[in-house]
Length: 462
Image (tube, rainbow, N blue to C red; front, side, top):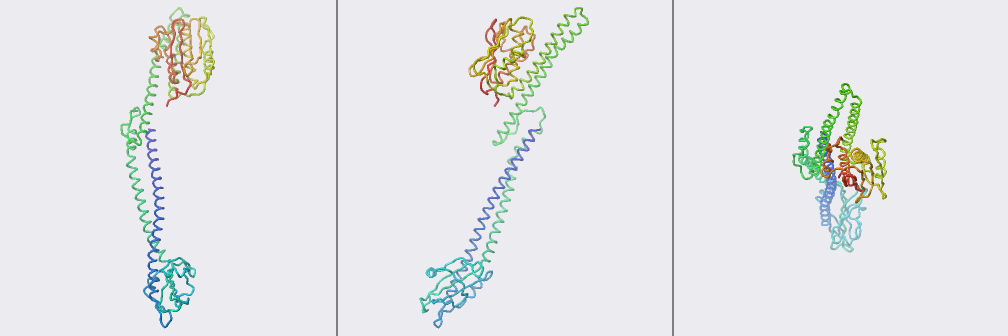
């Protein structure tokens, strides 16, 4: 069924959209966490090797001593061995006079001497084309010439730091990626469970017979209750439309059977009855009745269809009523009838369905000519409340008050009427589709049928 297919598409689409959205959020979160993990790994590696570098600088400072009036260094092998395991290590020792007594002459810390005397200072730099981390400190040597402060500078390349950073970051990023994949898989499983009510609704609709338009029995979750309610409402409207069409077919079949049988009987009389002119005239009347009935049945079906979704547009009721009157009155009548039209002086343009309104007016004018008017018929367009009223007034006997409500029901006829019983029903249904009503007033000699129409768009279904 179409509804089942739409539910399947909706369910799949929502699941895919949610998976894509959650996947995008997880991907962004993974990138942010990966960047944070990289920063943390870089900080951890820097701190670890900075401590080794500071320890090495302190050990070198502790091995600087005065011998024979000259500042001398006894290099600490253990410190150099630890620092040079993965990196190149450079150092320099300068005596209080500024003379380099050990290490590389061109290695400098670029840190003020006063700062070095307060403790080890760390900085970044470049030595011989390589990025290095530098630790510098000053040590007071008793008896040394000058001010007695010797300067120790120790530098290390960054290969070991970068290796440790990659190691820590890759492990953290691997864990983040695994958790993101697991989270996405768990989301997919949860979505499968969350959308299972839609799958059950789909299965119920797929199992139904074509004529089963009852409400869906599965209780939906609150998030899709409005959707299921809309589907139930659609099936209810579809069921009502099918019943209307079935009623129309049954009524049409029943109503057409009688005049057709009468035509058949009249045709047989043409051959057997000696008074052929009378039989022929009766046959012509039956044929005319059949034509009128067929047209009204089709008009009624059209009105029922358009009443469900009226095509409202600005319509000049004066022009419409005048046009219908000129076309609905035959050129010859079996009696003298005065025809009149009184337009509305005010603005007569309202939102209306011109096609169905034309059919309703044509039926009202025909009813007035055939069953009402003795010598006069007038169509009047006049203001009524917040809209307009189209009044068909004649000098006929009118409709008794007790029969008025009954005669707006399809196929309900007056006691002496030979009509189909559809004219007033069509007019009433058109008025109701526009948000108005059909009203009767007056009595014998001055009877009116008023179709009241609101000026606004109140007839459009919500």
